[in-house]
Image (cartoon, rainbow, N blue to C red; front, side, top):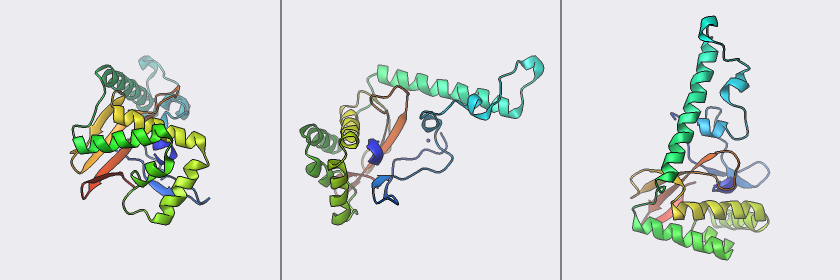
Length: 201
């Protein structure tokens, strides 16, 4: 997210890198990830481990106890996410960052991919890589639309679960991916360099 561009103790933001096939996409996180990422179409902890939740009278193995705890943690996170959205979400308090998010949202609504990419990608991305990324989006409508929807969601703020960081030099937005049947939590970081806010690479 933000599409393919665009964890508890292992929180990780989306990072971008060129894959083996030449495409720019999200850096694959290590095996230990947020529980919310584990729920991306995979079974819950108890089902994954093949451990049945036995009654206390029969005893619970350590693995079984962990599975029960994992399920409880997932339910708690889902409840927290629902409460955050019900409370109106979260919008940045930094006016300059909000201006950049609004600009990105407007460019995405217009379908101006080249204009969008110019003010979205990290400062240290080369011109060749910037052009390559723009070309990738132009050739993949589904990928572009997913990215556009997520940027618009962040700019609006009503479905953002939390913003982590000082929002002066760095802001990490946590939100649920739009148009998904599962509650998939995503994270994207924006950082400020010389007054210019960009997605972190």
